[in-house]
Length: 400
Ligand SMILES: *Cc1c(COP(=O)(O)O)cnc(C)c1O
Image (cartoon, rainbow, N blue to C red; front, side, top):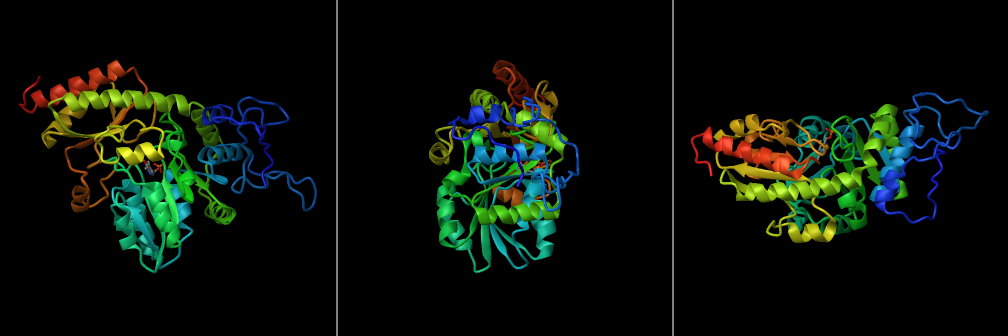
């Protein structure tokens, strides 16, 4: 086992403190405040049959260990695993399943996950049913003898639909299924699925955890020794691990997660208000709105709403002028960074989902998704307003 010593021991620390203190002085020889990047791929054995805890970097790397322990603690899990990307993390977890196995999956799903399931893993004999998990009855109905797990995104991407994690986990347990939650949108600062009964949590750490649109990474956190050992085996066997430099970048980003999430959320609430009052917009989706159908569940299971907002323009013709008029917010395909981004799911994140499924789910060609950054809210509001005004005037609509 890796030998990085956890100094906190019995000291009670809030998540904010744990994240800031991650790696601090854990390199015992030097006392480095910022944990060093260990580029070494091989480690000398002190004697035959002995190990420092590090042998070969795919199996374990000191910088990666600090990151993995940090995310495991943050999520309240037993073990953490850092992967080359969010997709690598999901693929690694899917190694738990065998030909013929079936999974029940959230209907409104990240497009890349859908592509991995339908275009790659289906060829290996895994089967997936996409189900609206807002109602757990749909889960019960979708379970068949081959079902092994339920894969949940909440809030969903991009429609911000809320699934009751505890209710899903209860049905899953009763039926002998694993509950897997993609917690990318919420982060452990807002939501800790393992504490609600889930068995495994996944992240695209490229998003909020990294937080600066500059590192691609995935994380897995497991609960229970048996599951942790299975994932440890798969992580090492598949080898889609995160490199040490990227581990360091991600750790550095995670130190400010709490501050960033608070600002993402207050900015998002300010933008939501602007969007709802603007005549160019017909619908706004944000789980922090009391009239959002998932609001009550969200308040029960999470301590925040994050900074993701989706909305529909009045017509699809407004999309191009809106995106082209944005001056501060970038039209770009990611989320969770300090810089505000706007995504057009129909042609970007969800382009690989067949059009009829996309439209059935509600990812229509009027839908836009904002990842609200941590800029000054007034600047973001001004940018959104002028782009919305432009989208109306350029398409012949009336400006306020
Ligand atoms: C981005 C994303 C992924 C994929 O992660 P990568 O780091 O891009 O590989 C998975 N799930 C969700 C919810 C995402 O937003």
